[in-house]
Image 1 (cartoon, one colour):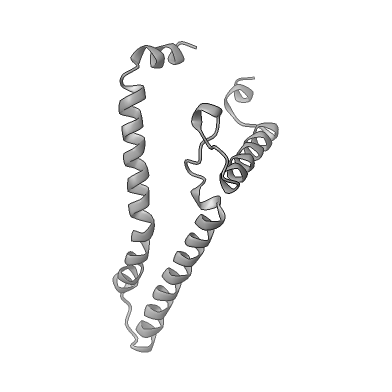
Image 2: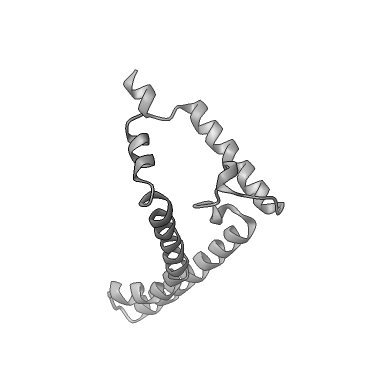
Length: 127
């Protein structure tokens, strides 16, 4: 019984998937995606057409950079994983800075709504 209270089951996953799909569709249609209405795009950016395309392009460029470097190293009979990592690093930056911006927004949200409302947090903890 405790596991049923704590772990998601198939019905829970189906409900989450449906809600995620509805949220993405609303965003794609230009409809309101407001947390007050029970919708949130946080973490779903890559599921939009634009986000998926951006991620796919970035991954392709990263793969190309790594593969090109690897081929050069093989031809020169050099074993240097750091050169491969260096070839990849500029492409990881494309994901890094937007993630930092989202984290900053999350921090601001927490400072404004959670830290200023300790009684609400305590209420939720006592449920």
